[in-house]
Length: 501
Image 1 (tube, rainbow, N blue to C red):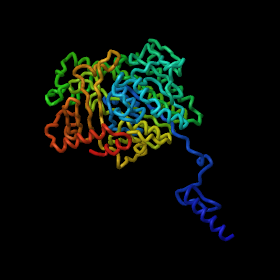
Image 2: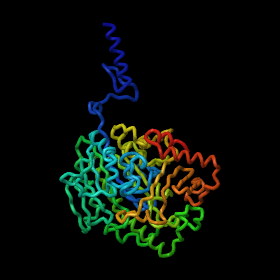
Image 3: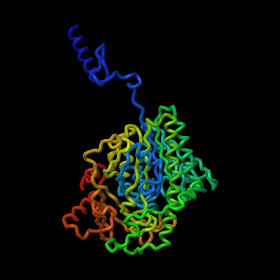
Image 4: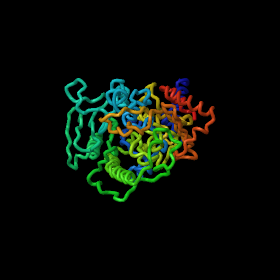
């Protein structure tokens, strides 16, 4: 009997040091007994991901709802694309793999596009099937992959819905914002040219319906709203068409760069921008700002709806872009695909449970990190072949001490295609195939034709002076070796190589 009492006392002490007391033994200071509700498994958080197309940092100043997200949450100040091109970036976002591992290197076959992504197993490797298996109701709305056709049946009898998606409202060519088809859960629906058919608004309304249906459900949800805005042809909603009449494109020090003799040959051929070109750039910038007003309003409506439904405390809202966009910098008219800051560094802002308000993370994050982040939030271990790392520690206010110091950027120049909405970037005078390293201190680029660039970003943040010729040979050899390691990495080897500077 005495021995049993001693054992009971031991068990009570253990319980007291845990969640509560036992048989009159009170919990220690700072602890309390768990309620029956708390003893149940905690509900997994909801995730809303708003992914825009070609949205650059200089548009955020004109988006009050995104600015509000920055005040209330976490901003990644150094979020870098592994390739500043739509389809390659999205393949990386879905899988957490660098382009050299997804096999999606351009927007269209044979080196990229939707069919390459699908045939190489990208849909099965996407985070969506893993989330669905973990109990999530999943939805994708808007843009999927370049080359995707909403009426494609993939051998079935109805328009195809990829694995992992509970709800599917996806367009093919939605760039004009009007006169498009949506594959709505296997049913093709046409939208015309009425004001209410404006694609960003249609996606917003469907997204709010999806959130409202989740109220009271024990099932967590993941929803990605992927807008075509602000991609060209820069069509704003009618209510915003006349806004910002006097706005001009920002004139950073790199705008219409006066001396480009130090630049690689693909860029040295560009003449100075003249007055007509400058006017077109200002007009394009105004329309891009006008376009993102509908996106910004959507974000405000999502946040309001989450709060009204009592879901805001259980939901992460992630806002970002698939790549940046240059518009006049370095003498370049509208486009992307360079390794310059305008193209590869994009906005990413997160609000949600335990995310520190008004915080900014300066460590280099990448689109490889989004899939493992979503999976960790859902309680799912990312596959071993994932190249990126979860950003969840940053969402908790703690930066890992072993986080990457250097990011990889890789790009294959696409062949010209009349079907490519980004064909200006495959034309003569566009950047040739390259691989690059980027961190706070440097941008180092190696082109397939043997040309090199090196910018000291500490002294030259606008990347004006290519000083590769001043690098000691040992330093150039080190950067080349690091670049080789990263462009051939997979899974954990990407993490270890990225810790080098």
